[in-house]
Length: 472
Ligand code: BG6
Image 1 (cartoon, rainbow, N blue to C red):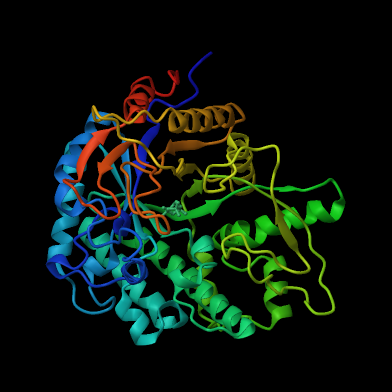
Image 2: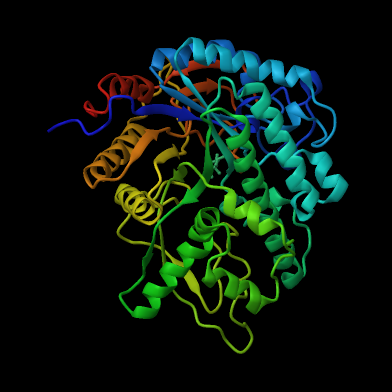
């Protein structure tokens, strides 16, 4: 069989600033919302103060990336390291840090692929005007993006704007939504979402202006929702779950406006965000160059009718906020045909093929997978090895699905598993690990933070060397 992966396919790996860097207040860095949230759990698990300590181990870590053979490294810049209070003075030491990282990657022919915002809004902006609730936040983001383009754009050509706006938006803690009245809460959420769309468009336009040959796009949290039965209303419910949790976001980026089904919901709920006349032009001009997608699992849904007590568009209380159910739309069900990780993620490589085909057919933009991986507890053996064949299995089956998508004619140009090294998981600290490289620390004990290559590291090294031909 001919190898379908193009010669310069971007084999890479991913991470994000607050989950790996540590050095949370070093060299002038400001506190972020991600720090604030992680400190709330410091008594229970690891927090972002040290995380994987990339801030002090970056040199050795990039040596490992070279050894692995990575063609690209997808990582994020911490906004508060560059501008500690979000919209004030620029911190040269933050710029110096990322310059060192970028230069070393380039020296090793590893393409730096940078996310501007991965859940870590500078906390000072929350104190000032509750972050994304204010339109000013979009302009603060635009300024931050421009500073990054000016300082790094000579060497960094590929940019992701927001990591998972569509998922972040559902999690009150990440957005700092403290309102408890359900209607007011949804109004705030919708306004924040809109300001993030505006920020996305402003940054896209700025990149195209400032970065020669610059390419920019979103990273969405993607999934497929299967209908629980073949009843037409269940099929519709599954479609709506997908549209409301992912597609509306891509549709907005693509068309520069809300898709009809979403606008109808906003109107029905009386939560249409405030917009300004000049926004339409900004949004329409902002053309994304690619779509980055984070893919872990699929969902299944059936129709959930509205009732006398619960009107259409009301969220069901008490279920997890990431996969929430909504009256008049859908209810999430378990898919008995799929195995799930110990944390409940239903593992489904075929779903990745479906997603890639759908996005390609709908948007016709190049696609890159920026996250995909298995989060679980790894065991370090007495001779310092990690035998993570379960992770190898997961990655192998998903790479096969990419190969099948390439055969379907989909344009996929890269694959970056989550994550390059073990990092801070938001709710499970270091108990849940995703890395190809083991970081020897626990939630309670920092130890020496030694880096240990897992079996999956050696396996992925062969995959890269053979350009995806050898998955054994
Ligand atoms: C993605 C995020 O949604 O999921 C990552 O972009 C995150 O930041 C990953 O780590 C896995 O989630 P979790 O909760 O298992 O860490």
